[in-house]
Length: 620
Image (cartoon, rainbow, N blue to C red; front, side):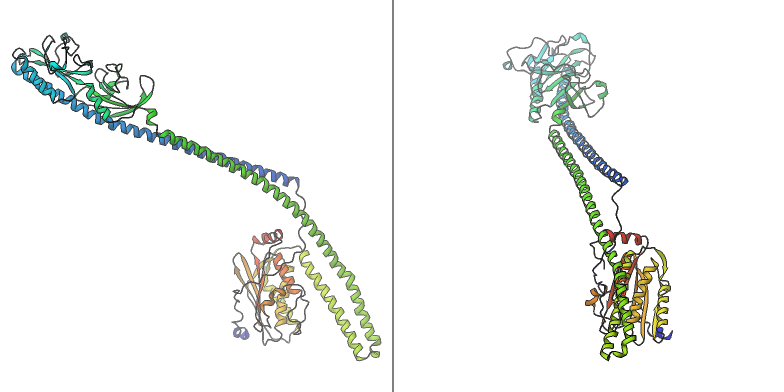
């Protein structure tokens, strides 16, 4: 124990910081592969159909996604275009309503002032003709929306008008209002259906107010004619789209008072933009989509004031409202169609790629089967050659050795010293040849041995091997240390052979070290377990490491170290059959550390199969 404590720095785990030396790999017996059975072909066909089905489903899903996205985008753009047009119509209606309210308000104020003037006099007869004409002309000059003002007697005949005699050659003989007096007494401003002016022939909207004295006696009426031309001028200044229609409507009677663009058939006709005019009472502004009298779909907006039964309406053809939307919709449709076509082409290319890949795989599998058959034939020939070496060469060598031994016993005294020396060399050469044949057979048996994976106690196994070595040479002073608890999942026969070779080499190459130090340890290393055997023996240069794991390669033959050169080659094949790797670190005079890894379950079963499937890959 004191020696272990003194040399404890040596027994620490060596650092595998040195680069692993890539080693050439040898491939021997491969697992026999049989042609694919009918069930495998059926499975491949099922997988192919499943893959085609997946590609088709992906194509239809993406196509549906593109079509649905295009539909949503088109509907969204259409809705936005309609909303913009509705907003434009609502704003336009508000502007027009302000003009209508100002025109009607100013006219109503002028009529109220004229009515008070007559009420103050008590009768129309108290006025001279010029006394009535002058205020009428004065008021009319300040009302741009009014075509003329007029005072009517109790029987409805004109008493005075703001129209100058030189402005018309056809004075009216009838009242401006086509309505008999028998309709009864009405208070406030009355808005009558549109008529053509008896003076100018243009369309006007009559507004009238009846005049009463303090006793309630009917004195006559004052009236005004609001010109359509005034509103047409305003509409032209707004530069409206060609299909827009603006209307001023008598909401109580449901009649069109003014329309732009002008249409005689529409003026004075029932307004059919909404079904129920009563629903509009008290609404400051609304919009809707519907059909006009010609069955054309239009967007409409209207606005009504509570102080008078006048409603302002504006409408636009839905086709015009969507004028900017249609090109955008067409671009979306073309883009969606192009994208769907691209997806279809991609799906076809994928199917062709899968089909070609399957054909390539079948060709590759066929080539693999052919190569496997060739390799199996070569392996059988190698195995036959190994048996030939074992049986055909071993017997002659034994005969040579036996006859040399008999010659030495029977005729050794008749040979001179040189002859006896030659005879001893012959015996040693034959024995050496037998050892090399046995070693070669052992190396070949590594690949023929079937793996039987078991849970192994590597610490106990290594200690047993060191105890056996100590029993063969009890005179040597060896300080060995085996870490406790080292375990692995591996084949017991092969792994014991590998440890015997590694510990045997450490035992052999520490012959001249005083004292000899041997350490066996391990630790986790990623998804593997790392193990190592370290010694303070003679060591070697790392540029010779590639030769170390090749058969019949010996680095210290001249120093008198015996061996066949097969041990480390066997170690390498054993470790690689388990899915691990092996490498070495060394320096002349500073000892050697040999590392090997073994995978943990379940990678233990996977690694050897991967190595068989990729024979061209080098593992170091």
